[in-house]
Image 1: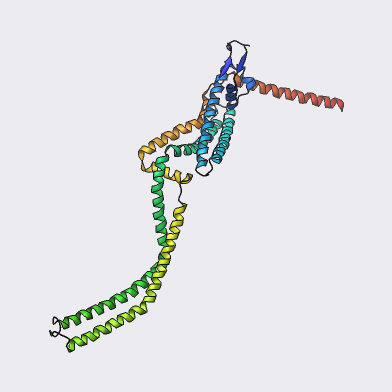
Image 2: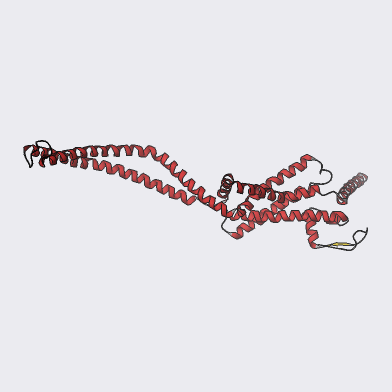
Length: 341
C-alpha cells in the first residue's frame, strides 16, 4: 500500500502508492499536507478503508434495491452506482467536518451520527431483504392470500346492499312455489290414499270421493304450473342479476390478484410480518441491522475515535497562513490603490 524508506527520520523521502493516495482522498486528507504527517498517514488510510467499505456496501445495497423496482439489470446497477456515489459524498462531507476542534462537541458529532444512522438504517433494508430472500417470499405468498381474502370480504360488503334485495325477491318467489308444491303433494298423497283404500272412505278404486280428490289434485297441479310460469321470469331476472354481480366480483378479484407482486414495499411488509411472527428471525434481524448499521457509521466512528496528530495542526497552520497571506495581499493592493489616487 505504501512505498517509503525509513520514514521515522525527518526529511526522509516518502513516496505513497496510488492506492494510498486514493484512501487519503476517500478520507478527505490533503495529499500535500498528509505526506509530512508520519503517524497520520496510516490513520487517514484506515479512515479511507472504512469509507471504501461503506461506499461498496451502499452501491451493492442500492443496486439490489433498484433491482426490485426496475426490470433492467444494467439500469439497476447504474442507479446503484449513482446512489453509492451520493452516499460516498455524504460520508466524505461528514468526516471532513470532524477535526480535533470539534471532536469533543456533542452537537455536531451527534448530528453526524444521526445522519449516518438514518442513511445506514435505510441501506440495511435491501441487504436484509437479500439475506432473508427465501423466507420473505414464503411470507409474501401467505400475505397475498390474506390480501385476497380481505379484498373478497370488502367486495361482498360493498355489493351486499345490491344483492340483498335481489336475494330476498328470489327467496320470496321460490317460497311461493315451495308452498304451492307442498299443497300439490298433499293433494296427490290424499288422492292416492283414497284410491288404494288406506285413507278416507277406505274403498279401493276410483270412487266418487277419489274422483273429487283427483280433481282437486289436478286443479292444484295446474295452478302450480301457472304460478311457476308467471314467477319464472322474475326468478330468472333475479338469478341473472346475481350472476352478473358475482361475475363482476370475480373480475375485480382477478384484476386485484394481477396487481399482487413481490416489490420492495411488499417485501418490507413481509419482512415485518416475518419478524413479528418468528422470534428466531427477529433476533437475527436486529443483530444484522446492528452490524449493517456499524458499516455506515464506521467512517464517522473511525474519524472520531482515532487520535488527532500533526495533520490537523498542519491544516490549522496552513489555513492561518493562507488567511494572513490573503489579508496582506489585499492590504498591499489597497495601499497601492490609495497611492495611485
